[in-house]
Amino acid sequence: MENYAQADFRLSARSGSVRVMTIEQKIRAIMRATGWKQQKLAVTFGVSQSTVNRWLRGAEPEGHRRDAINAAYAEHVKDDAPSTDDKIRGDQEILAMLRRIDGLSTIDIDVAFTVISNALKANRAGSEQADAGDRQEPAIARRESTPSQ
Image (cartoon, rainbow, N blue to C red; front, side, top):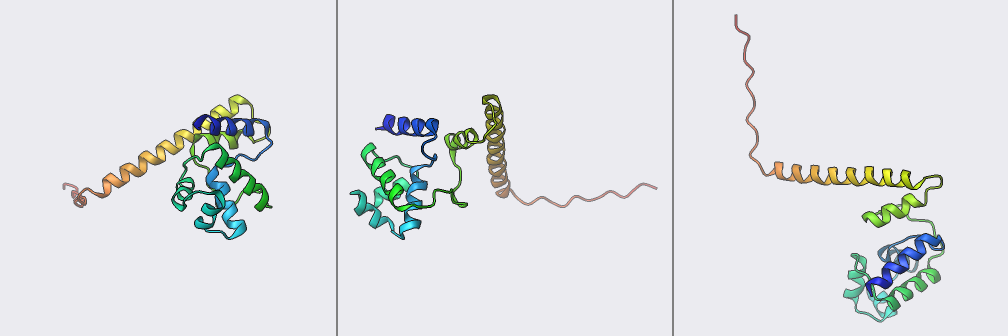
């Protein structure tokens, strides 16, 4: 099943025939367009509500479920423009977005991806250090020495 999902993503991204979106983004777009809740989606796709919830947290559906989600997306979502609240998450989505920029060479994409990846790693490391620093005792105020006379 995992190979099906990977192949589907790669073929869609390469051909440019389908806007590269995660299953989570497609499900959220369907929910926005229809007003459906997770339970209604579960009934529609023949799964439990907890399965829909797992998909919304990044789990990949089986191939025939993925096809059903894609069909529901095509049927119910009229505006194919990306939502401003859709976040780009993960290396694959970053690369897919960089590849969509007209005029970038493969080298340009590699450089941009490296810069973005390093920035994300630095931000994660910085916030981890800040969190660790928050647990330390407060610093004692430094006393300034008075100039000798």
